[in-house]
Length: 557
Image (cartoon, rainbow, N blue to C red; front, side, top):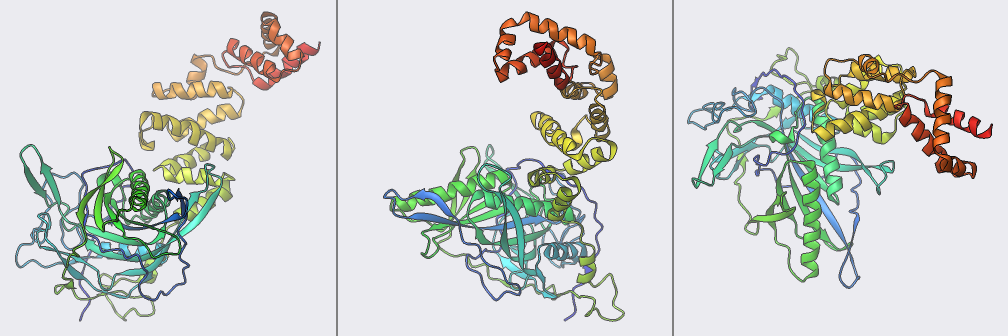
């Protein structure tokens, strides 16, 4: 049977990260088993679940939690997986629906080449084995927002299997105690998204929007190698950074482009795994961590009180901070998987197996995609540490905020200040201002060139650190002004007249004889208080080091 025809699709990248969209929903993924199935082509050692701190009421046993994830990432493509309909977030309802998306009789799927390439690139970045032959299947179930009554997915033979995702977590409360963990990836498969049901409670009716129906998804199934919410959230965040670096998904959780289902169970170490529950449709890393930790504790409490854990699907109520039941799974649903009759096997090639004279537009070369892999987040962090000598935790912080790394690098290019000084200003002061005002990096009124100019003034000792912070605050309020203009207008230049500074120090010492007496008695706080008083008089224009030298000189004279 011939390989399916591929439909081309160009891509426009646009990366963003925001908070939560509680309206997005995706409840139709392949089940993630809690036991590893099949032989693996690579050797991975399954991590042992960490023991939780909770003990039973009698103090006899500890509990171990087991967490696996199913992650659905929307592919960054201008059109859908099997139709030419465009993909746009927040478009008018049912404005991006083709005949195939609406499942009208006689319509046939045409596979989007861009989606296949995105799946291959993601699989390679996650150390997966890429299957040169993969199959499409129909997964049958009924939902009002699924017009065909089935979803086209890859249940039998997915496009990528047996991968791994490395992520770093902090041990204890200090970020410097960082350890790297690895979670195994069972498979990556291509599948369609469903439409969206909009529930109108006032009119007691449900409206259907099919704009999302047929959008291409990557389902990444992680093996149950994690043991708490922090690990799961960190792994998802690392995957999000990888997808954004590859350009295979914008992975914007606020727009429902990255959705997570968590499978959770608890058991006593050395005993069989417990009954699992599934928490669906988590679209925030913070809520993912909270939901998992809550569900672990809930299951422990239930078991210690003599109750049983039900094999059920639950959702997370972020307002109440708890999981609530949705439906039970005791009666296993029969999805009636069957081969997709309208799509032949998907055939991929490497350089060695590429047919002679093959049309480049109709074949996909795995090796060529491998050559196009960009620098991954882990490599970027290592490069930052090596090139600028910054701490590991600072490299994580620079990558975790969208646009912050580019901002940092642009400042570095335009300033003579040391990289560590730039890092401190970007992460502590600049990022702090953004958080206080709930702004993204690209919304900041302070540009990299402006911050670089301010740091140059500080580096040349034209202004003090305290004055530099005053200038920075003014930059947020006064758009269009440069740091030099603000320094000149507010007379914030460092005090260069040492004789005038000596007179100020003398006056401060005469006005605070008790503090001077404490200083003579060896009280270390006294000198700091005098320095603060002098800086207040000079409006933070004097160098604290110079002030200290003058005070000690006058005290000894």
